[in-house]
Image 1 (tube, helix red, strand yellow):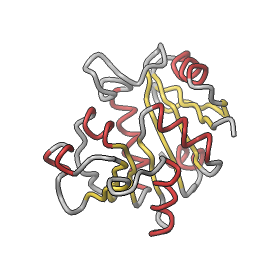
Image 2 (cartoon, one colour; image 1 turned 60 degrees about the vertical axis):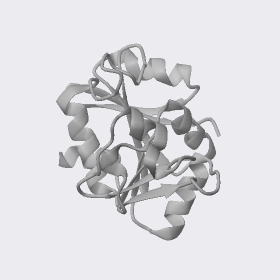
Image 3 (cartoon, helix red, strand yellow; image 1 turned 90 degrees about the vertical axis):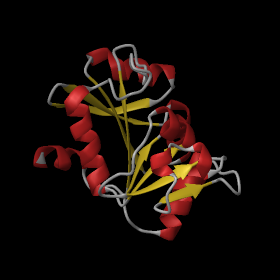
Image 4 (cartoon, one colour; image 1 turned 45 degrees about the horizontal axis):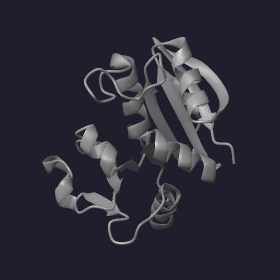
Length: 180
């Protein structure tokens, strides 16, 4: 694992997403949880462990049936009330962003950076992720897949740029950025 940390470095903001061989972030169970297997879960836990805050969207929290991260705070970008989230997330520890004033994903990241200097890990769906990468150059984003073509297909579909690639166990991991 130390070799993986040296590849990632120590950025203030990271983002990750797992995709299948066709570049889709939705697996057969309707979530991303069925993609990437144990290796992807391990990679996700590594990102979460080094983050002070995990930032996701209300849509992702609902569709993935999110639970509170064990080692970091959870912030959710949503235009809805807390009652629309899974029951496990209807607690004080969850910070809602954008529910009173509509914010873009970039503005949500900026709000978190303004309130704390701890690392942020972004777990958005493809629309919010690509929007964030187009507006911010300080995010190190990684797309992982068990299939060599998975990330390339995703990159092409969402008009992103490939920065670099590496292997983590059975995963092909590709760093991406937006076309700013």
